[in-house]
Length: 370
Image (cartoon, rainbow, N blue to C red):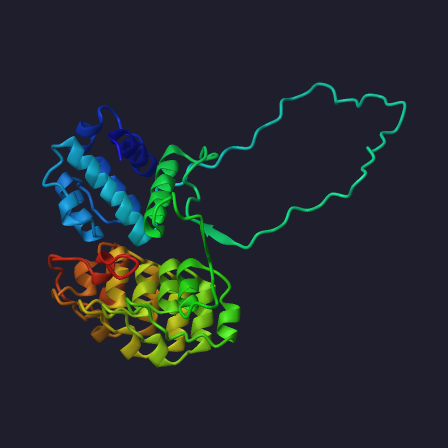
């Protein structure tokens, strides 16, 4: 990402930047505004550079891409690129949407248009052959989708994000040169249902054929977990309906995370509700990953008020809101939203906030179990 690209993305996400690029960022005002666009109420005023750099760490930006200060333009641009990438991967944040275009207003006319007189009715041209519809092709996920073309109406910031997404997809599939397309489902693949959760596709015939919803990939992910990550609500609910048992709902990946951890971390309200409906027990809702993080911790750290309300409605006990992770952080320790803090205190949270040493494991990990 060049400095020009960084500026374009920043302005699309946080508003216009006045003056030279680096000096305009060094007081932290613009960058903290960006942080609050990515995560609501992530940083409270007064804004400064140190608060933004702490936000980068909490978001999960690798330590090597977080500068010690905002003195060097190259380091700042690299950090902005890392924030853009991490916000996209962890939260699906692509930047502010462009304002809606106003409908065109036709010019006023003093006289109504009068159609030209025609002496003869129009006769459609004869056709010797009936039109033949173009052959349809099966749905595929193109490795190079969005990698080229003019961007058709997208803002500059959105085009930059689109190029980055295309580059990431190409790298995962082995490069733009050698990969043409990947079928969305392949029933001969024993992990076809898992691929449905990850990439989309028709899950119905796979479930009817008896594909195991509990099958896990090398990272311990099930089709249900991928559906939670990717927001595939229909597939997630189908997997739950196929096996609503606690043994399925409570399955954990290689880092101890459940489907409810993923759904809460990614703000999948409908899936969170479906998972709790299948297993409303406190034992399920309070499950901790290997870092001691609960779904409530994730929702509080991310500022997801609606998720917090669903979790507390299912288990609003003082025991639930008092669970601490391996660093001793309770939900109240990591919350930055006033409404969520009030909800926690009403449920009996009394612990004093402490410094967050590191974010929850689910913030650090990438899709694929890294």
